[in-house]
Length: 102
Image (tube, rainbow, N blue to C red):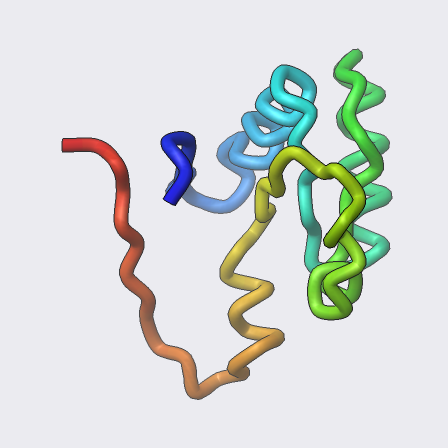
């Protein structure tokens, strides 16, 4: 696993996406959103806040592995719970996440 990995766990509307926008602007990592509409919303929000980020990827881009061989340095998954719901549906009831922090 890469030495860089982060997870933002906070309530809805508590600035998680804005933090990903800032991280994307700093690192060049692409944000991945659950839909094209969300990708457009995130990109518009980044521009409104004055941050230059690459246009976000979508669930469909990731599912089709369209990012492979493109030189994308990293991916930041926005609202990972929505991705997991699209993959597994209502049957998924929980997840565990490993951090690199001690």
